Image 1 (cartoon, rainbow, N blue to C red):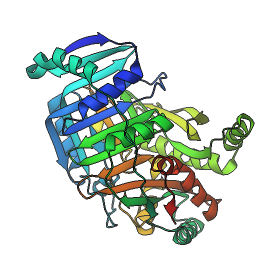
Image 2 (image 1 turned 90 degrees about the vertical axis):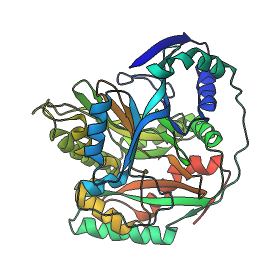
Image 3 (image 1 turned 180 degrees about the horizontal axis):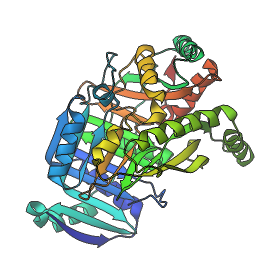
Length: 431
């Protein structure tokens, strides 16, 4: 049982920062920020859960059954993540590539203390046995000192250098030419060994990105600092939506050039083909749990503009059949099509063979379940993953490879997606 209390405030940016600084005392943190990109699908501006009362952590082969049981029995807010490698418990795929991060395959927790910001007010929702701490915590949050530290210079290495990247993409193109796949999302990792302040890094990252599905996730010494622009999947009552991104263009400070880049993306035949292929894959995935005839494309190839890039996004909707559980919806659509390809199984197998790192949480999802079994998850892209214990920092990017792909251009797209990372750490990449 939760006890709720509502407080008002004047400056949302100030409260968000105070909340984040105050939260650092806890072992478990999940902070979700829309950066005020609110629309008809938004439920809140900010959600923060801290201090696990209960939690689950398991491997890929029992993950969805464990999550289903945990969600049904808890009947409360639970926050956490799904790693990409949960695919190994769904399909005939393995993950034997290098893993410098060592995140568990799945982790969710029931927070003792939950905060939801919406419309210039904040709701504190505490489990009953800690509800007497609510007013004192709010005073502590208001008095929390926010400060700024310089981000250290960190030099990243590309696990796949440019020459090998181009060779690998050409190998993938051979698979496409033989008809094994139509499209795949081929990824590469930038990595470094260093100690960073996770919160200061996230604040700097979020400041320049202002992404609609940003998140700061902490599980002891493991961190995910995400500036994700992409929603994976959301459930509201019986309505499901998925919003895959396929198609990226850089921004320009010159207004005329920026509008031209946006126009060119909207009319790029290759980018539209990539997006539409994934839309078809998502439609098929959603149909597995949908009321027949309820799967609809609400938006097709719409251009959205963010601080760093323009993106092509589509929105697909369905209505869930009662006989399926909420985790059935996730299991039958996971991993998301925008990070795999078509056909999904073949694309995942080719990615595992072609890539040289274990994706882990990258290409997975961070989000939450409500007590009413609604949920919302992002796609873990544009995300700094950090293992504080072994000082390993990872940032991965990918691009869609289709028959029209040019390996050099795909490599340059990856660098565009990594631009924010390099600017934060004031560095270049060793190619």
